[in-house]
Image 1: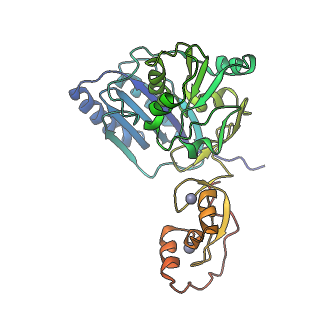
Image 2: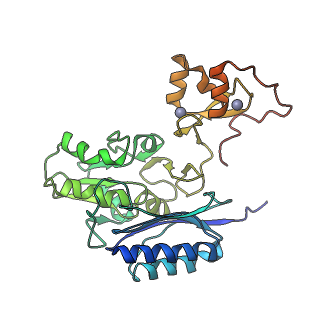
Image 3: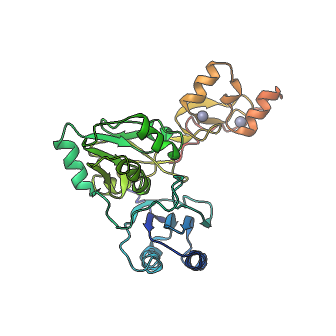
Length: 320
Ligand SMILES: [Zn+2]
Ligand SMILES: [Zn+2]
């Protein structure tokens, strides 16, 4: 039996901590030095409210990276959500200064304690199993919820996270309802919970470390159904934190995709999403193409290129 070699370690983390503009600059400088030292790729956001990142690197560098991150945020407790892959999942390393470390249109609104009504993965799991009256809400975007969510979770159909306060406003519950909210790694709920607490909800809880931490504790999936969308080349991860074999990325809209198509221009095989598939049925035949570039040729009616000799098998563009 051939054993697959783990080539990169991946970790996602965030930490809310008030930083002056000088400290923000200093953190960005430190991170820009550290990245090449540890052969890191990925994205780290820095703002006056803290840091947030997902990065990958050779596994032997990971402990030192984490130690450096803890140092940078003043040695405080940081939760790291770990995974592995057989290749880098980001094309490059980038450190970006922002006004928020998660785009919520709520700059300056962030937790001052490290635990604002958190439930650990174990507590979360037991609560869902034991309390049939609990309302579970997914705070992620619609295209993320589509490929997997906790059993029975409400999908607010957000196109972007900034729609969350309006959703809370438009969908009132009894103020003492026990509400459990979750997202990918926990950071969106750190802000989302304020939108509920500010409106008087007194029994609202968030999944600490998000779905990714839950998967670490429940690698067979537990009460989660499907896969978890991630914002890197893996597209999604299975509950055992392996890159998906089921989902690709739709070349036309970027959503997770699994419907095979043969490009009418270059005859490559690709996968497209169900939304774009519906638009093909509605007449937008250029969405059959394998890429935006080919879609342009299809729209123009350019003559298709000759079929290449070796045609890739169906689903050939899905990450493995
Ligand atoms: Zn699409
Ligand atoms: Zn094509």
